[in-house]
Length: 106
Figure 1 (tube, rainbow, N blue to C red):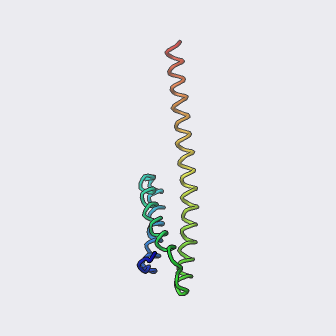
Figure 2 (spheres, rainbow, N blue to C red):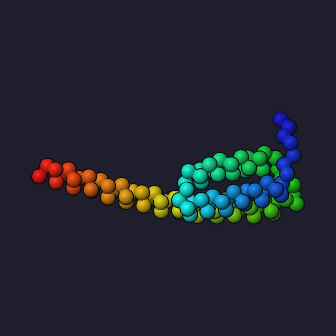
Figure 3 (cartoon, one colour):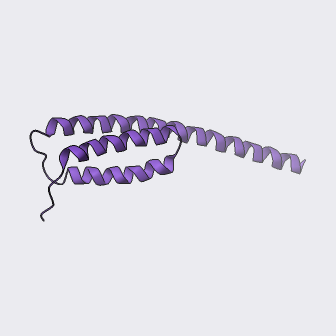
């Protein structure tokens, strides 16, 4: 199947932009938007990897991929911290509910 040629440098820059934007959205606790941007970024990655990169572009692509992986590691850490916070809040709600039920039973 023939694909149109990849416009490498703009696509690589777009990949970097999407990754940075995802971090900013995560810092703002907008996880729904992070998920939406991940879908966009996945499309860019699919486009970049559907054919071999020209030799002259490989270093730029490698650098962008390394930056994306580092960004993803930070996103994962932030997501875990947010999940822990949500879990703690749920525990507090459950404790409050049990206390309220115990009070009503008393």
